[in-house]
Image (cartoon, rainbow, N blue to C red; front, side, top):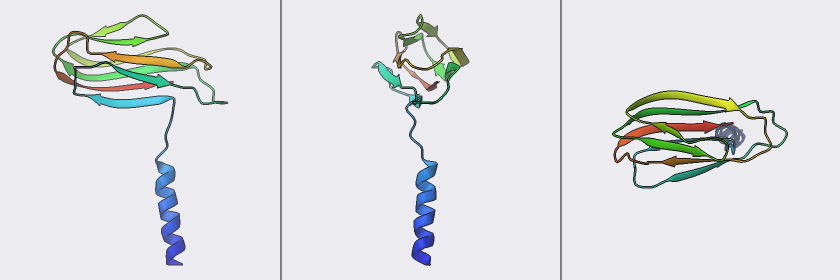
Length: 112
């Protein structure tokens, strides 16, 4: 009985940790390199929008780039949410480019 209970608890914990291909969340402390992330739509899932959340501060301008729209340039203290239409099918590639920024801390989330 104890072994079964233990196994059920472990399975419950593992099921709470879900890997998704259509969402990325990360913290930027290193402004020396570009970061690329690919969001892949999940098959048979309905989509209607993508969003980008950026929160934190930087000492100069950064760029968020994508294969679906123009570059987004942000600087200083940032607390923004951007979104746009997305109806699935295409993979979206996002790039965080430190551009002119050398230091700061940002929390960034991309999602479909």
